[in-house]
Image 1 (spheres, rainbow, N blue to C red):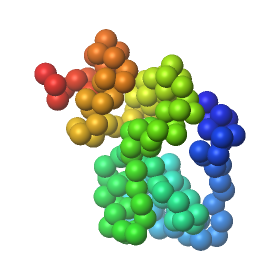
Image 2: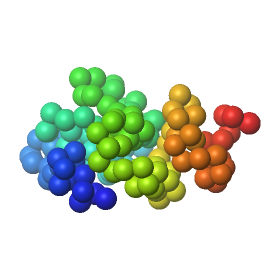
Image 3: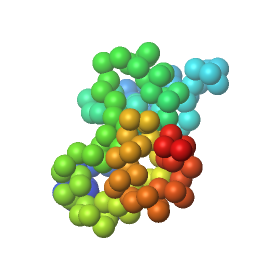
Length: 138
């Protein structure tokens, strides 16, 4: 699936340069309350270096990014997946699988405003497997 999105130009695989590595270091070194895990830090550093959008779900990372780099555009995974070109590129079955995999394997966090949409897209039976989705609708 990743190869398909790269081939269609929706995603790019990138390596950090010197500026990105500096940003990365500033995000991972320090007090635990003010630093990020490697994945979030690398995502933010890469987006800063490339002038791209950072795709971040984790609340702490979104807060730190907004405080340190307010000019950097942020999207959640759900916001990215809701884009029509992503839906079209994946097709209905692969799109549903992408949502389920993001929830189960990547532990995607879904904002309350997006829960109903995600539940609709994966179906109520599947949504019931994810307590984080159904807790708001109980």
